Each structure stands twice: as C-alpha cells, then as structure tokens.
Amino acid sequence: SVVFSDNLESIGSLTFTNCSKFNSKLPTSIKYLGNRALSDTAYSYDVNLPNLIDVTSDKTNTPNDITGWLMDGWFGYTQIERVTNLGSITRISRNADNFYMGCFEGCPNLKYVTLPATLQTIGCRTFSGDSALIYIKCLAITPPTIQSSLWLDSSNSTFKFYVPDDSVDAYKAASGWSSFSSRIKPLSQFAIDFPNG
Image (cartoon, rainbow, N blue to C red):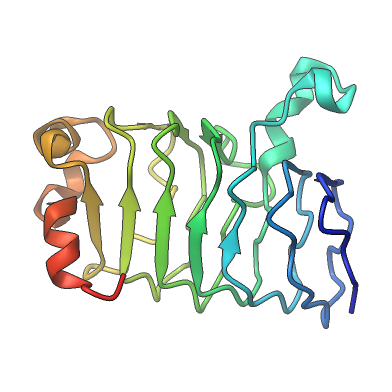
C-alpha cells in the first residue's frame, strides 16, 4: 500500500505497472498521469481526478513527438468499475492501431464512464476489451473525434451512450459515432434510466 500526499500532482510513467497487488486510492489533486502509471495492478477505486489536465511538453520536459503516448494505458488491465471525473483533458489514448495500451483497455469490471465536456479526441483502444460497460456518458457538446474503429469492444451491443440533449443528432451523424446511432441517448434520458447516477 502507498499513502499519498493530499497535494500530489504527478505520477510518472510506469510507476506502479505490474505491481499486481497495488490498490491505494489516488488523491483528487493529481494533475498528470504518465504512460501506464497504474496498469496491470489491482486498482479498484473510482477514477475521480477533477484536476487532471493534458500532458504537455512544457510540464514533462519531453519532446512533442512522444507526448502522444504519455496518456496511454493509465488504468489498463485494472479492476476499476467507474470513471467519474477526468478533469479537463482534451484527448485520451493515442491515434495508432499498433500502440501498446488504451487508457482503460482490458478492464473487465468497468461499467460506468463519464467523459468530460472538454474532450476533443478519443484514440485507439481506449475501452477495448471492456465488455461489462453499461454506459458511456460524454459531456462534450461537439462529438469528440474518434481516431480508430478499435476504440472500444464492439462485442458489447447493449451499453448506451448519453450525450447533451442538443447534440444527439450531431453525435448520431458523426464519423465513429454513427454506427452506434441507435444507442445514443440524451442526457435528460440518463436521469430517468439511472436516477441514482
């Protein structure tokens, strides 16, 4: 176990990767997560990181050509069930079909996901293998760009997408989203379907 400082802002790449018994709750103060920071662990807490922001070369002293993978595999192959707050990130996972791991790839217990209003891009394998999904709630008014058909586990044909009411038609017509048009619902319907959140 690890006791984190309440004002911890950053966890670097590969910090807890393959620590199979690691399951210590992250503080909400986290701003930056490196590549595969908690992948292949027993982490099971809700992902609630309201201060999370995009990784940038200025903050990590990395050249621009590798910042793309710094958001990869954050919670891949963990035991998380719910993603409630990803702060103000604008992108998630990388746009490359052959890269190592999506942010939430291979999470067998992941059921509930909320994506932030700031999100602009969803990369490859973000939810690949997450067959237990019940809903993905996307708060972005403009449909985020889907960069790969491999972004989720298409074998799960029952989970729903909930999006802003005025954006339903835009999502249904958007590339990458249109194939799920029958499952895209307004956020007002979410309150009816899931009155307890």
